Amino acid sequence: MKSHDQLTSLGEDSDRADASAIVDVYRALTRIRESHSAFAGRTARESVQKIWQEPRMPRPRYKHNKPLDYPWTLAARDAYFEGRARGQLVLEHVTPINHMVSLFFDRVADPDFGVDDMLTDLREMHRGFSFAIITKVEDDRLTAAGLRSKRSAEDSAWSRYEVALGANADGFGAITDDPRYTAAR
View 1 (tube, rainbow, N blue to C red):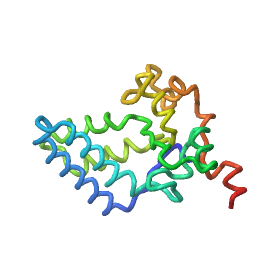
View 2: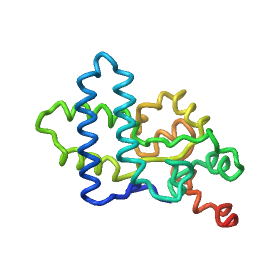
View 3: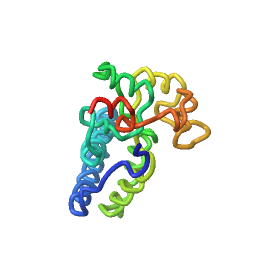
View 4: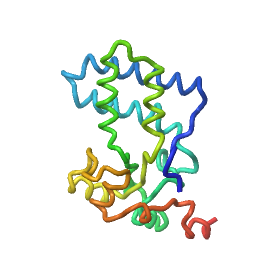
């Protein structure tokens, strides 16, 4: 199960070009953020997801953004193997992505913040445990526990899942490590 350094570099030139594009997106959105906050927030979030995260996720994947070797809850793995996964799974950001969005808006407000800074931030923010695959029902439980867009008081990488789902690291596993995956191959 890949629970650290979950994204792979596309090479220095590509990484730098993508970081530059994200800086440009955030700077452009800063100008319209007050009058169109929902649009700016969604676009800012999607720029990180589509430009940085998804292209660097390992394969094989379920759909476009759920790598089979990332941590999946038991319920998510069951849905996958039972053929019930379509529309029922969520790529969960361990540190809620709104934290990254807010930080980047704050950072690009500094005129001295540049591509090298963004590249460093993107790499650092994705160095550890960044993503897990959960079901929509589990995502709803995170929301009900007040943890959809914040971390729990314990503030460990797994704490949101321990509080809302009763699942620690041992409750997660990769699809590729599951005996059902090996049996199906």
